[in-house]
Image 1 (spheres, one colour):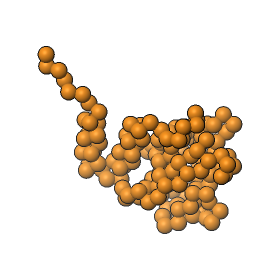
Image 2: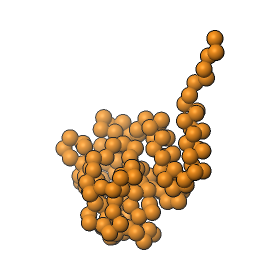
Image 3: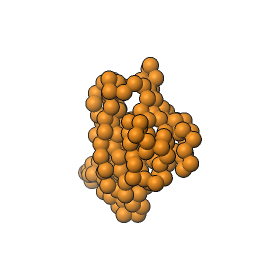
Length: 148
């Protein structure tokens, strides 16, 4: 299974990193430390080892906070341990990480789900202006009403 991480800050995409089952074992470490797989050095609110993402034998994906001071959030909810779904938004410090994966072996989540998650991430960062964008994207999925 391939895990893909989009790292966002201030509404800007900082970078994208991917790991497959051959490049790391079943754990991806997130933090500032040199041993972290997903290293984020420039956020003062991230711990040296902030959290880990684990895959079990059934390809279920979990995030575990490693006693960080500021906490770990998944889709806006503070968690100690949580099951992740493709497209979930992780927040550590002021950094947002969108994680995508597909248990069936496909490389990306469906585009609509991904677009909705990214817009949700932007809303968390940008507030009201992003709400206007979310409405525009939602409207793009609607079909015109036939008056006849």
